[in-house]
Amino acid sequence: MIQTISTSHYLILAAALFCLGMFGVLIRRNALVVFMCIELMLNAANLTFLAFARARGDDLGHLSAFFIIAVAAAEAAVGLAIVISVFRARGTVNIEEIQSMKH
Amino acid sequence: MTSAIVEQVLFWVFAISTIGAACGVIFARNPIASAMSLVATFFFLAGIYILLWAHTIAALQVLVYAGAIMVLFLFVIMLLSLSDHGPVMTFSPTRIAGGAAVVGLFVALVAVFRRLPVTELAWTTDAAKMKDFGSIKHLGEIMYTQWLFPFEAVSLLLLVAILGAVVVAKPRI
Image (cartoon, rainbow over all chains, first blue to last red; front, side, top):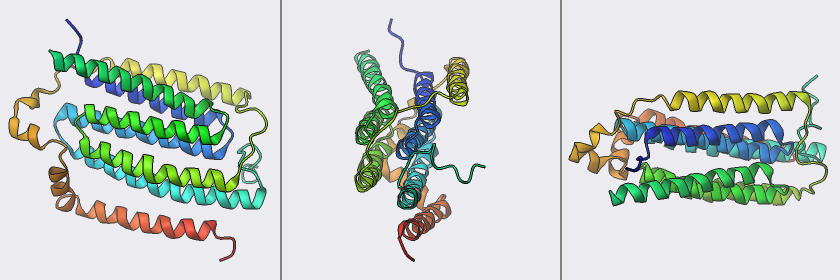
């Protein structure tokens, strides 16, 4: 008897993806890679929505995933513009060196 | 029975590839390698979405994420021509605490998700619902009737984001 793939499997995959993204955000120093890790976390949220949509037979979760993709596109556009202007002002995208608003 | 085996095999292939590619994003030295790993992650995730009967979202994932957003990332990486120097990651006490918190979060989430009741997918006996589920026709119907306002709000958000990106990235306004 093989065990079928349940919603829990998808949710645990989403949790792993979210935690990897969060780990990257906390550990990496390159602002661009930090952005990519945020995209990973958003995708984990999408996966959770889709897993519950299938479990409940309600495809409103698909619509939420669609909106998340749109918001992620907007976030990437603004975030990358900020990275470009910070690089122009400071010559670096290392988040350890960009800390004038921290103290 | 064979379809269950196929689902099993595809799930594990896509899941392990997704996690592997996500590790590649985090641990790659070169930002370009990170970006390419992220593209791979998105493709494997699209496979997972198809296993979840979300074909429309899987197509959007490839078009918007792996297509548009990642091209934007690659453009910026190449525009900035970053030279990688110094260690990829630093290990200050706060970061080690953060890493430990991430592991704790993962353990807690897994503990919660394993307790989900397995009373799911009872709705699949409804043939009409099954046929409509996740189809672009059905999603379009909901999107342009019940969810019309959020849809228009998202278009406004994208417009604001485009204008914001142009204003922020411009050297002189």
